[in-house]
Image (cartoon, rainbow, N blue to C red; front, side, top):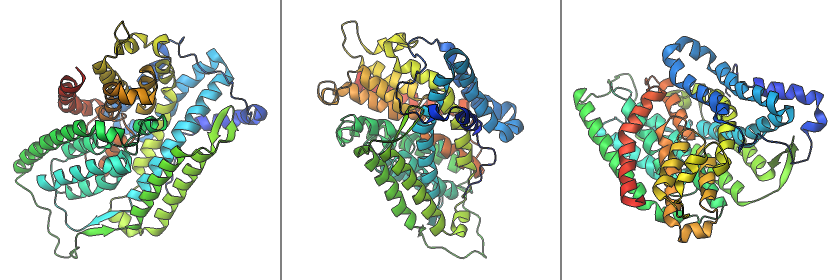
Amino acid sequence: MPKFRVLPLLVLAILAGISLFFPDAIWAAGHDHPTIPGNQISAVWVIPFACMLLSIAIMPLAMPHFWEHHFGKIAVFWGLAFLVPCFLVYGLGTAMYEALHIILLDYIPFIVLLFALFTIAGGVRLKGSLVGTPVVNTGILAVGTILASWMGTTGAAMLLIRPLLRANAHRKYRVHSVVFFIFLVANIGGSLTPLGDPPLFLGFLKGVSFFWTTVHLFVKTVCMSLALLAIFFIVDFILYNREGRPKPPHDPGAAEEKLGLEGTINLLLLLGVIGAVLFSGMVNFGTWLTIYGVPVEGQNLCRDLFLLVLAGLSWKFTSRKSREKNGFSWAPIEEVAKLFFGIFLSMIPAISILRAGTEGALAPLIKMVSTPDGQPVNAMYFWLTGALSSFLDNAPTYLVFFNTAGGDAQHLMTDMATTLIAISAGAVFMGANTYIGNAPNFMVRSIAENQGVKMPSFFGYMVWSIGILVPLFLILTWLVFI
């Protein structure tokens, strides 16, 4: 199992140390702990989060050696850059509650799900000599796009990124394949069901019918996907010919493998992951544990424990040799765990301001989604939901605009269907705009770099997304939301 040498657990250690001095408070059952007032704090509180993003964007280029060895500590530093001022201004209780709330209810479930999918999907190996031609690469992206709505963008991305990388190991130009993979498999493909992406799952929990997005986003998703697949095929075809239509080097000593799957037990375990996530959203076991006012619900605790069991079973029943051939290592999940620890902590003020709606520092933006007489501006719903989802967690961003639009699922699905389409499409489609816009984006990038693909920087990736995705989003806006 992975050895996270210097995991960003300093904050957890501090909280644990404090708990020794305040044991009654930590295990208190009350739910009235103070939070930072999102309707009162200024944008200054978002500086640690902005610096966290800038660190990810700049330091790997400006100080690569230092970043490689200390990025976990840097992530913790920016987390503390919010928590320490929060403690000084609002007191220990507020700082403790905010940290525990985001760690217990958001970060841990996030990492457990990623860890389970990473471990299980890493045990599935596509055997045989799959050669990364433009047709094969486009086919892999198309299959992943289809699978994403039914097994989740993270599940589909973790399952297919290694076959894509292995098929193109002999190619000179590989970055574009990974970038389009993130666009399609890790984001846009997950827009058709609540299983596809967390925002849609939250909508399902709020009363949106399971197949509502399938019906109402189908044409939009198909058009976006076909456009991106066509662009990818053209780009890959040009680069493939520029490389001289290369073929993998022949190894006369290597045994020929027939095309097939190895580690198929992991496919059953992947179904178990999907079932566990879906089940946890459909049942309510009530609060089993309250830590400093943060309620840990039974169904979520059971889900996370079950996911860890599934990951353990995958590790036990998948041969190490198969994982080695699959290019499997723990480095990508370690990097994601460290960096997102700092991201989740430092983004607390940004989420609080966003949730304050028209009473917070982002009020001028929130007010742009409605006309003075209260009519929705669907184009702004699409772009604001998408723009904020590109840098913040797209699940709470979806909920903010869902509630801004009234929060009544039945009304939104009927009289305000276009508004709900705009919110849903913005949260899912525009998660592809940055590496941190959706859970699997950064994981795919880490796996690719771990296998020798020199991926673009944070801003370099945004050049791709702005140049390719934004024009398509503008066309979608003109056709659907205006």
